[in-house]
Amino acid sequence: MMHLITWLTGNSYHPAGWRHELAWERTAMRLDVLIEVAKIAEQAKLDALFVADGNGVRNMDKVGLFEANTPSARPTVHDPVTLMSAISQHTKHIGLVGTASTTYESPWVVARRFASLDHLSNGRASWNVVTGSNPGDSENFGLERHPDRNERYARAEEFVSACKALWDSWDEDAFVERKDTGQFLDATKVRTADFNGRYLSVKGPLNVARCPQGRPVLFHAGQSEGGRRLAARHADCIFEAAASVDAAREFYADLKSRRAELGGNPDHLRVIVSVAVYIGRTEHEAESLYSELNSLISPDIGADFLAKAVSEDLTGYPIDGAMPDLSASVVGGNSIRGQLDSIAKAENLTIRQMYQRVVPTMGNTALIGTAARIADVMEEWYTTGACDGFVLGASINPFTLKLIRDELVPELQRRGLFRTEYKGTTLRDNLGLPPVENSFDPAAFPPLPARGASGNPQM
Ligand SMILES: Cc1cc2nc3c(=O)[nH]c(=O)nc-3n(C[C@H](O)[C@H](O)[C@H](O)COP(=O)(O)O)c2cc1C
Image 1: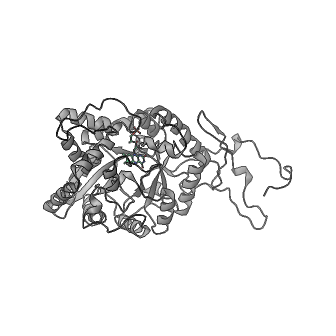
Image 2: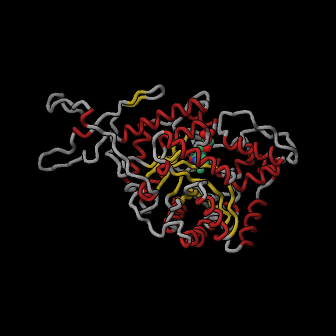
Image 3: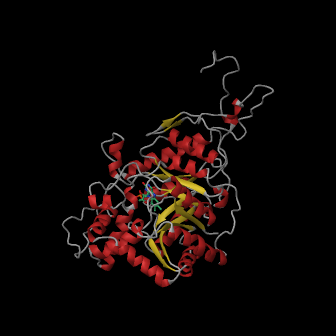
């Protein structure tokens, strides 16, 4: 079965979507709006909701763009795990995927937060592992610079390994809670993580019992060599930004073969491609909405948006002149920059033509049309080795999300491509992933001091 996810945000995916009359009137920090998004997505039987995140407010250097609130500027958003904890109490089946950065957080805190969410949601928690694509975030953490990509991924590798060791620190049945004997937990069923790396060390154990899924489902969103390596080793799912079906097939084949080379099962690594959805009840409605939304983006904002997407200052370049060469590497995200550089060169595009392409897709692929037409494309991608599923960007919220529920999902169900009911109880089950084995081996772990030998109990 195909896997479907959508973004847990009141914002619309198109940068000007929030201005459209079919969008919510006000969304900033509104829990009622976010609960509504979650409910629509769960009625559609989607696998999961996704909360993207960063560690700072972006785009303040481009005031027009900042004031226009493009989705990636994130000027006012809830902390993902706090938000997902609230949403978990208003939903029953849908998974909850949230971002946390390995560059600016600590493994003990991240492992604890997501394990806790997994308990609160009865096995629906997932962590989207990112290394951070916004260089300015470093200034919120007292660091002089955003570490370069190699360093970020070396730390990320240690970070995820440390979290895995922490999640394995308790055996499933450690908390016996025996009123008759006074034994709350079985001390033979805990171990410390004792992780010592070059960047991080953490002793453990975690102060959260082993979680319902064994450990939260791990997503990763990197696309570079380092990102692919990390995903192949550790991830259950990888998010992908693909500008074409051919690019998606290349990425898919690469990730699956990397997993196989490491001795893993390629079917246990899901590739989820991000798309922008411009659905209408008729072709005419879809095309009109698409043009209307694009007309709400002024050339200034379009050019600034493009400048951010490719991490290049485009000030002074004529809007109808050629795109500058983007082959030099930058500290932030290079993947979209590289992709767009190739497209601009291959098609000889101007800055205006480039932003007109990038704004509606956010560097991904746009699916425009009726449910049947969009389902045709999704079916082709899914059945020809381009992806295992999609993260659907609703161009106008809630209008698009409701049409996804009422038209697109039923169309995919008719084709036998998508579930009609949730079958599993956890996100891992619904994604068709195998249970996680605990690496806990009591025999390999030195026993705790004998009872009564450790002096007074600590408070
Ligand atoms: C669907 C999707 C979701 C993403 N979500 C986030 C996010 O929440 N936070 C973040 O910092 N980066 C996010 N990214 C960006 C990636 O983490 C990464 O920086 C980017 O794909 C470039 O890859 P690289 O870091 O390996 O160069 C996302 C990317 C994709 C495709």
